[in-house]
Amino acid sequence: MADPVVGIIMGSSSDEPTMQKGCAILDELQIPYDMIVCSAHRNPERTAEYASTAKARGFKVIIAGAGLAAALPGVVAAHTTLPVVGVPCASGALNGVDALYAIVQMPPGVPVATVGIDNARNAAVLAAQILALSDEGIQERLQAYKDALGG
Image (cartoon, rainbow, N blue to C red; front, side):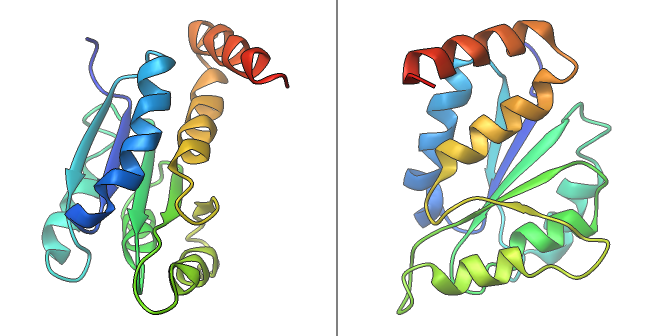
């Protein structure tokens, strides 16, 4: 398979079942990706390095999933100029609402596109739409995917 153009990062291995749903969409659309677990709180230096070197490694979009305080998508966005799509993962007492608020409320200059709680599928579709702006093959596969959904 080609080199990855989407980076998928999650704060905990417990987020993997959610993020795998996005991987399935990327697989269907034949978009290569790389996936890692890296906590913004427990591994801040590694998280910063992942984000700051993502463009040089050929990534064009990053999908970042996290639950609870959900700092990961914002930390990633702070260290790259690539588009970052945040996936709030349901966990803890607030079942993902806290993660949603944490991801959507970024400070000026550090945007994170945000999808619904546990909706890694939409994160993958959004990443594909971004990539389709400069890749006709992805555009065609994305259109076929959407047509199959009835929309």
